[in-house]
Image 1: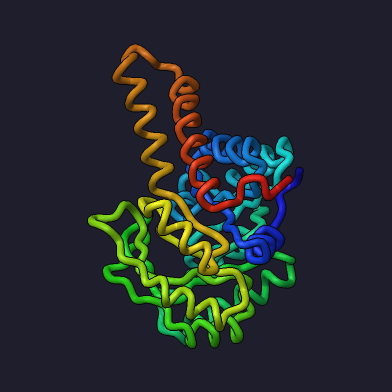
Image 2: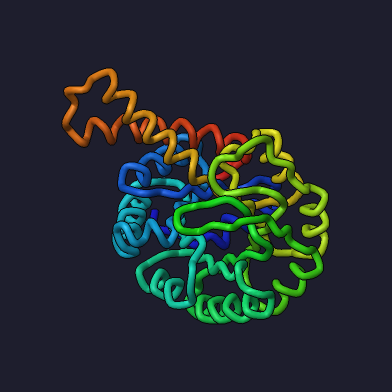
Length: 283
């Protein structure tokens, strides 16, 4: 089917108590692998690219790959700009065919974050495109994005932020981090529950690579409707390629490398989808 926006997906997830998996993709093989997992499990799915990934191949390339694979699938597929770094990039993504965008002004002071998020939301609304924004800072590093420390989301600020910006989903900081964790993460789940009480739009959890299944599942129960996974997909893909080259160093065909990478990513994504409870939700 054609690419869809994230609006229906997240609203259905909020209504039925599950979360949509949002998986960062770096190349054609990862696009195909993620959609294959969604197709097998009958799950709605979001593909994501960060600004750094966009620099690698361009917005139009990723939008075209996602559209081509979505056409062959019977499940809903969305292509989302993750951590959009500017108003201009968000608009470019919409023009290129992205069906969902994020504007990340979380590194800015509150009022500046409100201003840029509202500006993107106003333009996107006119185009029928949903907008995610972030309040609070998720620690760690992902691509060119780095936060030295976590600043968890304040529930009442979140309520004001949503009301003033017109965004359609909100990424919250509750102690997660981008990249793999050093030590065991301690999540402020009670804070998440408090945010859920005062914010009525779908909530998003970033930095889920490396979280336990129990933590992810509990966050979904407390109101998370979209969960992002990036680092662990890259690690799985690369590990599979390395294993093949170790076992068969004479391998030179890129297709052979791509096939083992795709298989590893598909299996990982299927496992995460089951934890989120989105399997079977596209039937």
